[in-house]
Length: 456
DNA sequence: TGAAATGTTGGGGCG
DNA sequence: ACGCCCCAACATTTC
Image (cartoon, rainbow, N blue to C red; front, side):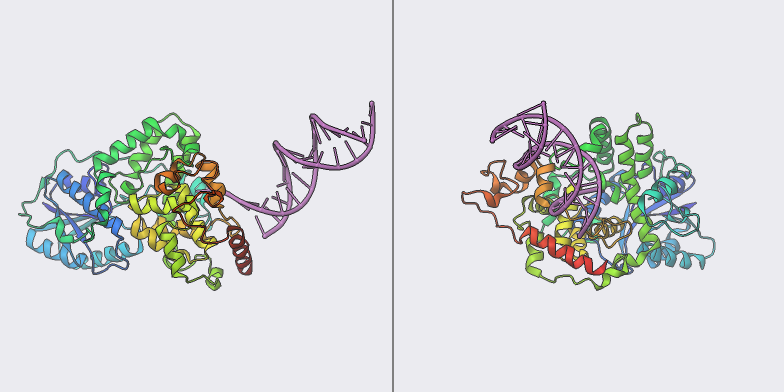
């Protein structure tokens, strides 16, 4: 019995129900399709880098049997079925709108072929969006009740499966090549990530172990300090499923209970909530969740947007964050909130532009998390930060990067500024190769409050 | 998962 | 000893 195993967003052997069940009683043909025909929004450059390396690692784990193809999913699958005597097609259950479209096409196509069974499994989420509803059968729009009442009182998530013990491969004579997918940018922008990130399933496991051994019991407080190392950095691995959230969840259940553990679990809950929102309200991918914001007058100032992107705003914490992003493909969570608040509230630039930049640069760029988080920051989302919550980058800097350790890592021009003035380098008397603040902070805050008050 | 403005309290200096 | 002012520290309200 020959089965086709389609990999998509879960590029791993551990806790992969799709692979596990397929390899139980058949020879498999593992395949990855980069569907550039039915795609609404192409992956960002950083995501492509991560995907490329994840696929390379997965291929290695699969005895170099992984088949790489590019094009229309349904067509490719049909061709393979015919030429390889395939009786079963296994794939993961989709939750993003675009993936659902591709999935439904495939399902329709396969239903017209005799003797081919289509099997799919949730490999991506702890709780499926359709299972979590309010008593009136409508979706939650607020995180806390969604998570506490909706998720935590439901049955526990599916326990993780082990890697398949033994995989029989269909003899395919694989002549495809990962490089044919053209995922690596020609300007070698992503090359610098090689020394910073190890992209593989085993690295993901190590990262989790390291986090659970050394950091989790400092997580609740420590996660706020960008210079310290108390957050997991698992997000890029979770994005393409190099590690399963079910695996992580069950590892957490084994730990001594604490607020730190609960807090980390709730962060996985935020990921669930983002998928959930995008599933039930897919219009929010490019429209304000709260329609009253549609009349908001955003500024279209490319020069200002460029200063933000390049980390030359003159506000050290903002600049450090934006440069961290460019250099490492990652940004500390607290700093993400600060730079987002700055762009949307102080510069009055549409959250979609910031979202787009993050989409391109973040190794963990995830459609649902990125959209939902930007709408949260902008105040336009479900259960969003209220419009009057404006982060003061100077205060945030003083509170969470007291010694300026994080700032100096990415903004070395400020090295000779004494640490007391590091958060406000414009107060420093000596000459600096660092820009003056691009805006008057207090005034931009006033403006933001005024503009937001119109749409209240 | 803020910040700033405003209000309250209480200790110390001082006439 | 007392009242008054100042102001830091904390609490509450407002944006």
